Image 1 (cartoon, rainbow, N blue to C red):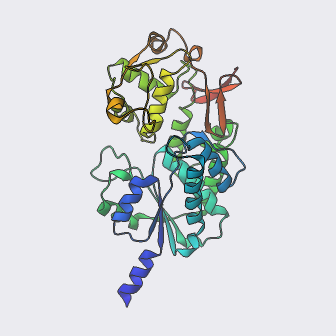
Image 2: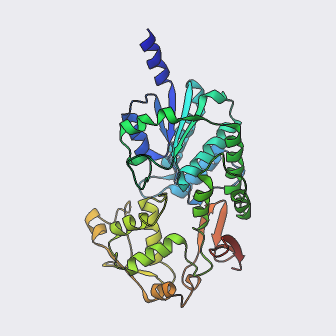
Image 3: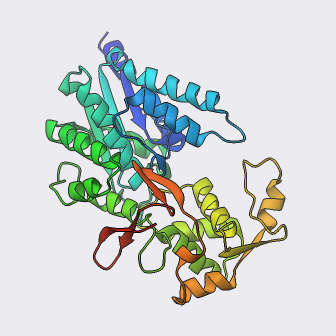
Length: 347
């Protein structure tokens, strides 16, 4: 009878984690319960302020839809995800499993902000958030672990505190603000309840174009790697990962950055043999054709890397980071690496 009771309690847990990699490990582990993967690459694309989770999910669906998934498909996925979250009271405990990188920290903000307004028993919400695991150096994320290693983390979970809930609400509001000075002010405050937040959000700010050359940090890394001889797109993705202290960017966004550098008003990268960089899930290219593409730096790209010209002369900007629309045709926020702060520049 006692064993049956333990099994019942184990099955009554809901585990929420970033994406399918860690989710599948949890499903294969001995932690039991249900697993909800929180699928959304939140570090890029729009997150308008003053929208609830359902309304913002529709905005995200329009942004994320592509050749393989229509708006309706993505809306359906988000709806199912959100409904599962809203059913949390069916469970005796909810455990959040995350790590220290930018994507995971943003997902923590969204989830804890949502739970702060939900009617939940404080003793039923727990958080696991790590930046290291014995035997892994460097530690890249939960997806590196085995199911048994994932199981060992369950006893490390800690109850979510009121200080963490309040901090998450403040941070989520600042991240979605159309004025990035709100996020800068938040980062400058006391963030100890969520100790990995400051480093993660500082990396977010580095994805603004930089004042020194007009490139984002990712663009600069990619251009420099190609300039030093990395020409195959797959190798470029992995080598760019190696330049990050905490991984947060997947292959599709990396490839989108490469495509943007190739397709700029004045291209910074050249792709052979087709002249444009094409990547899955684009149906016009096979896996072999994708792997055979080779990248090189154009003369304009070389001049930007050497400091002779600024990328603003070659690249039109029109993208979103959280609540901030970065557009070359209007006042644009840029990252001053020397002063470690954002500055507004004329369009």
